[in-house]
Image (cartoon, rainbow, N blue to C red; front, side, top):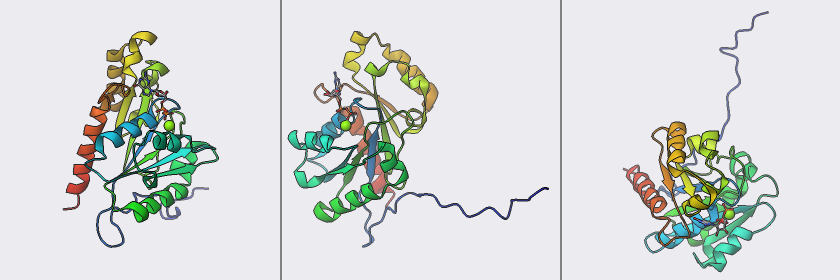
Length: 231
Ligand SMILES: Nc1nc2c(ncn2[C@@H]2O[C@H](COP(=O)(O)OP(=O)(O)O)[C@@H](O)[C@H]2O)c(=O)[nH]1
Ligand SMILES: [Mg+2]
């Protein structure tokens, strides 16, 4: 029996991009999500971005850990932002579920920060460490940064996966370690380009002074795009 499904498929319901306008009609802060495997430098990226941008922007951060508030506590200890600008979501499960599947706890944390210390210019939502397939729902963030590091091996860009191939920015961190782990940075850059085409890649050494500069520049450019879209 042949069934013609053309007119009979059910309507699809997916998370669409979160509404960019607040209830009062003003444009809300863009939400940028650093994700990537455990230990690559997501929290280091968030900390360095806060230090680089906090004098020019009103920033808030949401962290995601499985059973702890470790990343939020690190950011507090490092005093990258006042405590009331940092919120911790305990995912209780694989971190990607809270940034991709059921994003409600993260959305609530973002909204509480906006209500408590807003109006904000920028919200950073750090994913818990996950694997190469972990990506954010477009209903939670407006742009994603995928953080990998050279110590994970120079074959990671070649292995692909949605983080490496589709993130709005790919950060290859810990370039200072390249000589110690025998990694060819130019080869990594070629592989990343082959996977990503024109999408940008930033090589960073976040432990070095101003090592976050290429990522901070990219964030500034995203913010001016965001503001320009208001017109
Ligand atoms: N050598 C080196 N270590 C780094 C760099 N960035 C971060 N780290 C260290 O790598 C470890 C994991 O970083 P973290 O930001 O917590 O990773 P996360 O799990 O992705 O959030 C920490 O000990 C950081 O101090 C870097 O550029 N170079
Ligand atoms: Mg972290």
